[in-house]
Amino acid sequence: MTFDFDTVIDRTNTFAIKHDLAALRGKPVDTIKLWVADMDFPTAPCIQKAISDFVSHGIFGYSRPDARYYDALRTWFKSRHDFLIDDSWVVNTPGVVFALNAAIRAFTEAGDGVLIQRPVYYPFFNTIEALGRRVVNSPLVIKDGRYGIDFDDFERKIESENVRLFILCSPHNPVGRVWTREELERISGICLSHGVLVVSDEIHSDITFGENRHTVYATLSPEAAANSITCTSPSKSFNLAGLQFSNIIIPDEKIRRLFRRAVDQTGYDEPGLMGIAAATAAYSQGGEWFDEAMKYIHANIRFTRDYLAGRRPQITMREPEGTYLVWLDFSAFTGLTDRQISERILRGAKVWLDEGVMFGKEGEKFQRINVATPRAVLEDALGRICAAFE
Image 1 (spheres, rainbow, N blue to C red):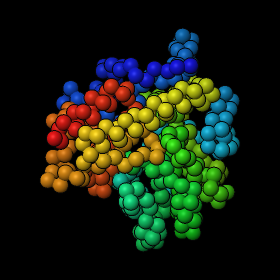
Image 2: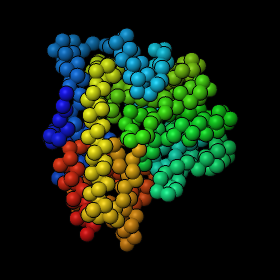
Image 3: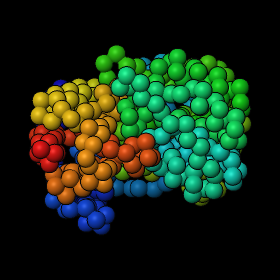
């Protein structure tokens, strides 16, 4: 089957925050929108059909996942990640950030330290601060052009800052690292020795390129599984973020019970019918569409690299090992401030990207671009950006 990823779909007036909120957020309306992390492709036909079938049925009552969902989920994670999931381990939430919030409330107290690795997905530190916990940052380090972990700093921060919980971003957003098994094992060893619970955001786990392979944190060892909460969702892989459905996988019964209690305290109960239908179809029938989408996105990444190198080599990209989010480095423009760089892109080029400082001060003079879009849109945006820096 051949899928069309080249057709440009008009997403205006579809309640899409990516395309309909420019004026409300003080952005020019006529920008090319390549910021927030959803795709500009229609989801897989099998998912569209599953949702359409429920719409035709016409009854939208309270809903719960059943054996069809659990069978599909198990099959996907076993075949794609060699991770065998027990049905009892799964807690469904509206999203991964919701799950992070529940985990922080369940396993930390006001004033406790929660460790993150900036530059990182900004809801991590926003949620920690909103709940009255302390953000403890062990920043990623760049060596030979590649981001890595300063393990000495990582352990020192845990020891000195009363860290109770660590939020791992795997694969990492925005820098695109796919952590190796060896790196994750070092993290696990440190966290186990200091009694630090690991909440692993693996929402981009399916999206890896080349020889890079995602390792589910809970597969490292029985001890790692018993000391972790794995947060997953079909939302990034199949462009389903608006359906508000995530799979939170917790092997340890006590941790799962405390997490469920925190979820119950929010008043959230049954997941939405369309989210269940979409996830079940995605995991049971969507593999072919997903694989083709990844080929297209990987080609877009290569196109971005080659385009910039040929026309504006001062703008460099950190080669993403995973995610469809590309981390662009503008630090070669030493005569421009971070704000001036952002203004040139937004007001001059009329392209809306995510400013690097959103992900922490470590993201200064970086920009995040979402390349899960038709090639023609990407080429237009890159041409505008390059022209703005002539």
